[in-house]
Length: 357
Image 1 (spheres, rainbow, N blue to C red):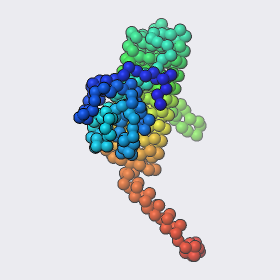
Image 2 (image 1 turned 60 degrees about the vertical axis):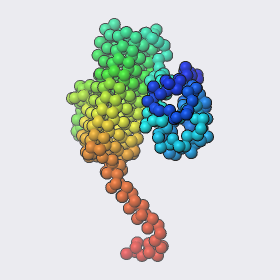
Image 3 (image 1 turned 90 degrees about the vertical axis):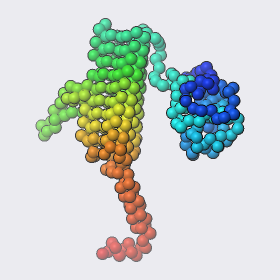
Image 4 (image 1 turned 30 degrees about the vertical axis):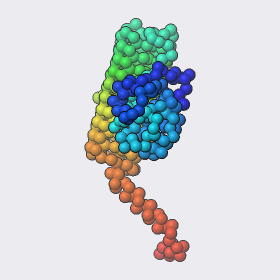
């Protein structure tokens, strides 16, 4: 359900506008009178809502859907009932995302409490430089020599440290902090994230652990999104880098000197140890742990809850603890399951003889 208190219903989209946004093709014979002012799942969408079908598990619900229009893949076209305006797209979920963004632009990034301009209660150092149309909420602090680009939003109680650069149309969510970092354009940092604090570096010894100063930066390239309460440490003696278009979920820890390539996906509760490299388009499932000083090759995918302790080849699909190619991992799990089943099914006499011997 769309709660109008938080996301007001926008002006309706006509069929012509939907086709322009999505690049979809309308099913022959469907009318042009459709007016879409919301979105919803197949089983709950109403006559003014757009829904989508991309997963066969939900195909059975299409016939009973009350949605005004549906985006679907060509393979589901014969399941669409008469009267439902059907928009055919090879990538219905991506097309649906474009419509949702057009209808609810405020849902795409944290929103300021006040705006635009610098609100009362914000602290902006006289030596900071803000371009036009920057929004700074109450309680936010912007340090000396910080530079913030046009259209950026700094939400309540966020902190921008000295000499930090934040690019145009970027957003720093409530309570987030950015220090020792350079951010590109259209970067979104959600609530409570911590960017640029010192990495965990100590020279250990029997006389105590000597702290190693961390003198690198964090470089966040264009179109990166960083989830709530995620932490990205600055480099020790070189930069920590997050590549263009990478999407990072909530509660992720990225240590010093890590280099993350372009368009990677890092899901919640991942921990990446220092000096590890992720090449472009790597995917790490939830709760993956990666030891330090390894390289995960371009396009590799690591299954959730796996632990990576060695280099992963490009394009590989690994899983398990320690992580290994999924075929080997599945074979091991199948073998263990069979051995456990055989042990449970052995007669008690066999088990006692085995223990006596």
